Structure formats: structure tokens, C-alpha cells
Length: 149
Image 1 (cartoon, rainbow, N blue to C red):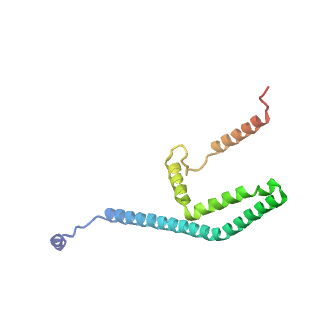
Image 2 (cartoon, rainbow, N blue to C red):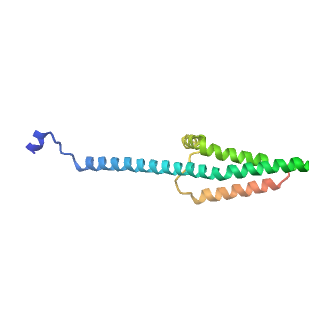
Image 3 (cartoon, one colour):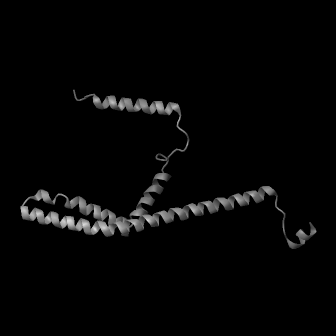
């Protein structure tokens, strides 16, 4: 006891030690989860970059062939696939080289912060299930009724 006092070592009670260990464990677990999420996001970006290497040439070739067919046959309907193909290529390029992933994460944080859209983790009661079934029945009935008289 005297040696501990001379060296300045304070003896902590077991509750404080357990609390510090639990805090450290929680911090490490959160750090590990964040690292796993970052790794998954990096994998998604790498996957989209690899996918874009195949999508872009195929899409550009399809657009070119559609444009040539529309010009050659003088039929504008052959050019209809051009707009969806270009928008899909743009979407994939934005995911691979843009800030789409950070925009998704920002919207996710806003949804989680909003109290109205907060997801509940409590179990669903039987009354809530019955109320939801009744609500769906009423919406089905109301969609079948013509109210334009």
C-alpha cells in the first residue's frame, strides 16, 4: 500500500476498470465497423470502375449502331435506345469517378437524422400488423371505387 502511494499508483476499483475496458472495447468495435464500411465502399467503387470498362465501349458501340441505323433506314425509332444507354453510362461513370457514393452517404445521414423517417428497431406488435392489413384493405377498396360521379 505504501509502495503504491510512493510510486503514485492509484488502485482503482473493479467497476472503474470494467467500465474503461468496456469503453475501449466499444471504441474498437466502432472503429472496426467503420473500417469494414470503408472497405466495402472502396470495393464498390473499384467494381464500378471495372464494370465501366465493359459498359462504356459496349454502350458507345450500340449508340453508334443505332444512330447509323436510324440514318440509313430514315427511321427515327431506331435512335430510341440512345437516351437510356447514355444515361446509364453517365450513371455508371458518376458512380466510378464522381461523388455519387458520398452523395448517397449524405442522404443516408439526413434520413437517419430525421425523426419522421427514423427506423424503429422494436418488434412489431400484432395490433400494428392488423392495423396495417386494414389500411391496405381500405386502400385497395378505395382504389376500386370510382369517385368521379
